[in-house]
Length: 194
Ligand SMILES: [Zn+2]
Ligand SMILES: [Zn+2]
Image (cartoon, rainbow, N blue to C red; front, side, top):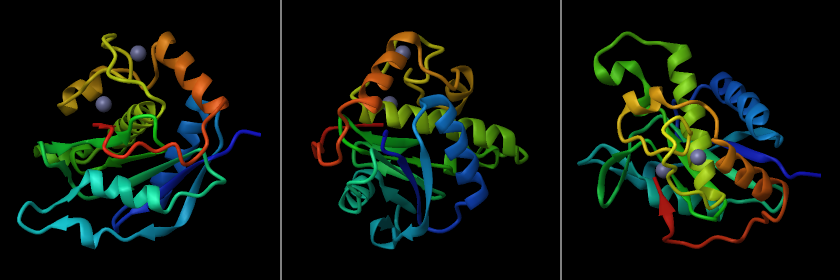
C-alpha cells in the first residue's frame, strides 16, 4: 500500500479546513493518500524578528526531524513569510530527493498585494505551490513548460499563469517516485529548491 503524505501546520494561523481541502486536492492530483496531522509544529525558534520571517531551510530540517516512517512525504504549511539566506522571500521550499517540503500562505493571499481577500484564489495557489514543492522532493527541478506546475514562479502572477498539474514528463516522474521507492530517511541536507 502507498504510504500517505502528511500535512502539518507549522505555527499558528493555518485554517484546518483549508488543510483538509488541500489534502483532498493533493490526493486527486497525486493519487497518494494524504492525512492532516492534528498537532502544530512550533516555529517560534525559527522566527527572525528583524526580518519578521521564518527561515525555510531550518523549518525543513525541523520537519525532517519529526518525520515518521509511516509516511512518504511531510508537507508543512505556514501562515508566516519564509526566506532563505540567499533570497528575500520564498513561497516555499522542498528538499531535492528528500521527504520534506514547506509552503507559506503569506504571499499567496491577495491582501499581500493590497487586494480584497479571495479564498478560491488562495487555495488554488496553495495547491500549486504544494504540488511544486512536493515535486522537488521527488527530484524534479524547474520545468521549461510554462503551464507545468514545476515551472519557476518568483511572482504570484506567474503562479496564477501555470496550471495546478504537472506536464506529462514531470507527472510520470512524480508517479514513479511516489508509487515506488520513496522511504523516509533519504534526506540530503543542504540540497533544496524553492
Ligand atoms: Zn514539467
Ligand atoms: Zn521550485
